[in-house]
Image 1: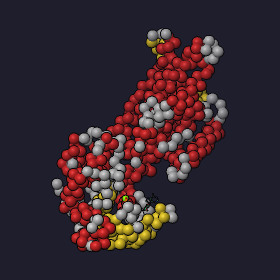
Image 2: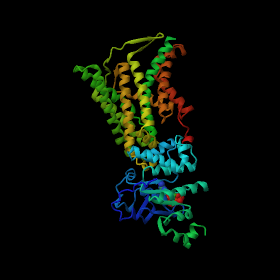
Image 3: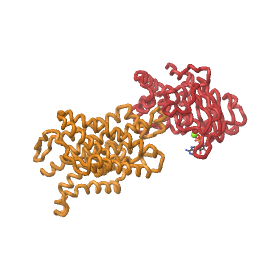
Image 4: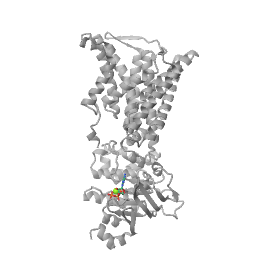
Length: 249
Length: 307
Ligand SMILES: Nc1ncnc2c1ncn2[C@@H]1O[C@H](COP(=O)(O)OP(=O)(O)OP(=O)(O)O)[C@@H](O)[C@H]1O
Ligand SMILES: [Mg+2]
């Protein structure tokens, strides 16, 4: 498997993603109260925090589904301010949403083709489809089955494969391990590592903080709309605060 | 027996027109969850545009076949523009408003369109030009004429074509994706506004064809024709299970049959008390019965299955 091409690499001096003082509100409720974060090219970054901390809100805003109340998001050196969600996909931004969001009434292969919606290189799409079946052989067996009839783990594979079909430069995953049996969690995390090793930049949101920090280069800890800690994964794993709050130590 | 066969023929022909219109209701419902009550007026506008174009072209001595083709294209293009406009003006600004709001704008748009049509085309019934020598054919004692044959075959072909678009093309896949989960579709790079617009335009093109079919079949067009036709096609969509394309087709054909058989036998059934002028009532008996006994329609999913 060859590396998917990264987006525009002309500005390769800058981080791929740079977020400054981001604020997001639902009506009058401030869910994100001014956060800074960045992701370098090829980095795997974990974003952890307890329920309601604002992790999903952050990812949705980066994907363009929510509009910030303030702050700046720069991707590949460009401001994302006026760029709609669907226009961010061809720029290389992909989100595997919380709860997976597979199209239950589309077949597995139709779901994967939806992932390639913003592309029109038919030949390369076919090549990528074959790659996905190699990466997730289970999906090859079930390609003509309605995605809604798959198990939770299989649906997670569909959601990930579908996102990869857009050839993202930045892949965001919102709790990919949620509700999965340990064996399936292992499989999903192996895949994440495998993708990361090929140079894709990944922002991983997880409840399972230990697992996330074990695979990530760096991590951010989020609490009630603010980033309270950040650093190399090893440091965070060893820090007392993280130990107490998230690792049950 | 001849009456029975004759009513089956009439019912299938009329039903195939209902099906085309019902598809427009069901496609919009499937993608936005709202009932486009202005859809019947789009059918009327299609018929009226075709009427004007045909009359003018035939008057200039354009060969009939060419005139028909051109009028069809003009009516379809006009209705597609109208469908696009209705969505932009009446529905898009209310996408996140309470359910009742777009219903009210739909009714408003219907009234505006009816009145505009009345101003442009007048209150009178217009004779729809006889396009071809309409030969009758005798089968088993019943009569089917050329126009009916053309309507039925064309309607089936269009429905088959629509199924191919929805189930085999990139646009169709995007339409089904948007219908199921707008956020997830956006995350795939789908411009959902564009897909919604295209859905309205597709349904409106079918409405234009249906409008021409009814007018050609009955030889009449009228500014008010969209109202009853729209309500019946809506009934057909509900009968089949609104939101379900196969349901709209099945519902259309069934409603056509129910109406025509009902009209054929109502005299016998009521000992002559009610006559075939009660034909229109059947559609609404069907609507009430479906809403009471099977609100999800024949092929519709139960709400619980959707969750
Ligand atoms: N649609 C919404 N309307 C109003 N408030 C919301 C909405 N979605 C989220 N919130 C609020 O915003 C805050 C952050 O929610 P968010 O879903 O981003 O948290 P999270 O970190 O992803 O939590 P979890 O780990 O449970 O998924 C919460 O207080 C939540 O109640
Ligand atoms: Mg969340």
